[in-house]
Length: 340
Image (tube, rainbow, N blue to C red; front, side):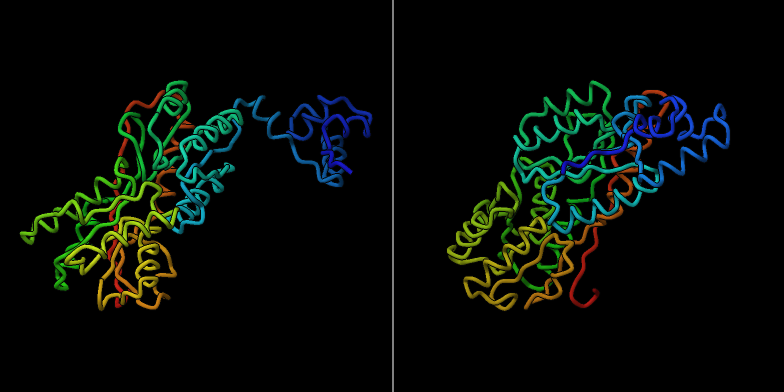
């Protein structure tokens, strides 16, 4: 049997009332007597009646929902961001619609079109590594849809952005390796055109230069899908360990790349950190359970989600157009096995 939701018309027919009377009673209107309200509310409760959100959004011109697009929910960093988003959105009476791009531009565009058709009140997005055309995002932004970027942002759209200090985080991680005595430090990075990649590779190179080490382009490997495709990481690590001399350490620029490098080094029977040391960005709690716990750059993902949502709700609820936008840059934390 196909599920059929109870409607206001059903309640009105059963109680021999007009639909407008039932509607007003459900909204606790002063125009309806207390006795009638009680009858309507009790009957609606027995039927587990829920107001139609689409009908309400048409009436109020607000859906009280916000869209979220991230690369992958299974990624601990993005899941923590989503938890932060929900902690604020739910408190303020907003529902969140969560979508994944899987680093696929076409899927990102289809998702944007779907969310726009659902009349979301605003959008939180971390763009995919494959995003090379901003027309869809620009069009939605120009049409008045409030948009806030979190983690991965684009310069071409003037709005709020919540990021971390990627440069400093990468610099700190590379300095940590240098202080341990490593000198041939390779870098396995995300897609080359992402702003977070440029910033993190920049921090890595600055640390090397501080130790009078010339960055070697052959020691930097880019993975377009950011570790979501393990064969990309396999290729990067394989190419690095074939170098003569090979790296004595690897710095990875994301969660997936860090754990992917660890997996590939183990597959090649390379001891970490005895033969090749490893450090990278990671928010995964499983890092400390690995056979060789490593030092990682941890991002305040939950806080990023909270701050981004607060900024988005300010845009949504503002009575006048917002023209002054902020880029909030939060600090990372270097976490070693000793200070976990």
